[in-house]
Length: 158
Image 1 (spheres, rainbow, N blue to C red):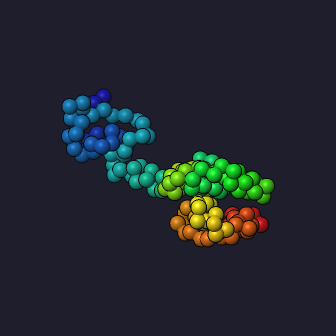
Image 2 (cartoon, one colour):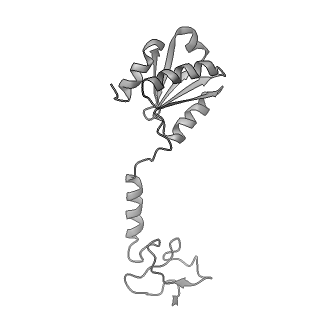
Image 3 (spheres, helix red, strand yellow):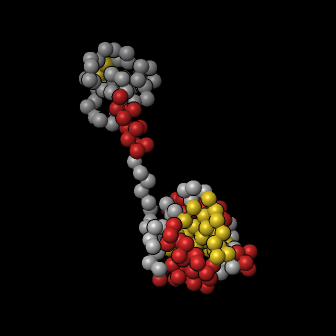
């Protein structure tokens, strides 16, 4: 059964979203459907409830990785050494080799990795690593010798 736009279809009936109260779909006509994916004709309550529910849904992480070791350059041996230390401490870690810091940060954000250890030429020379918290956008310098313990504290594993 189809009705025209603006016709009284009674309470509780539903019609396609995007054209409520307008003539956007006039050339196709209105079709009454009993599908929960459409907005309620009464007051659009379903749409508002769905939006609230989507805001409450927590982010599903794409990986179990807790730490991304971001090597600024191509030092594969250093990457393997640092990640091996983290694995020995039972931390889920992975590494990336790239010359651009932004690419490492983007990878962490997309994968839901909470902490990034940035290692560049200046960090290697000074013996200090840069730790970035992705959620709070805070960066801190930590000594290379205690970076595993510091990461364990941050991840509440000690």
